[in-house]
Image (cartoon, rainbow, N blue to C red):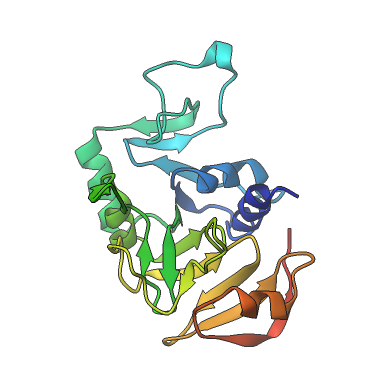
Length: 219
């Protein structure tokens, strides 16, 4: 299975019926395609939409109806559109039940870095609304590939990049494992199909303990 699809499917398994959810750019947005049967979730787009529906066919896409990543969206019955300032205020208010963010790095303290990398001596790009989401949402899930292109761990003892949110991440989902964030240590809950505990140990910098219920990912 494509590792990005695996992550999106596992993220979808965290969604509960009736929740109000924000999905960040990239892999998080794909989770809406894999919701468990019978689970209905209202999705929010930070540019100012509550009630985001499925992606439309290309022929039905409208340039002025998109999510925050400029991808075309549809609106479900009862959807609400608002200005960006109102949307950001809602994000900070605590009304969102769950936020799923892509990440460049996460660490065992629940910190997340997902907005800045250094290229040619300059930081790129901008932070967007992720900081507001980290502040205003009780359940923040980080999803990312477990290692970078050179095979180095992105699950760290301490983030090295500028932080998006501090001590806010509750769950980490990668192409290899699922962790909960404990007290200064990660708790390994699940492994991806075909991935062993030894594989995870070999590619994880962060300290972690293994849950008594450690098992294969539920997809």
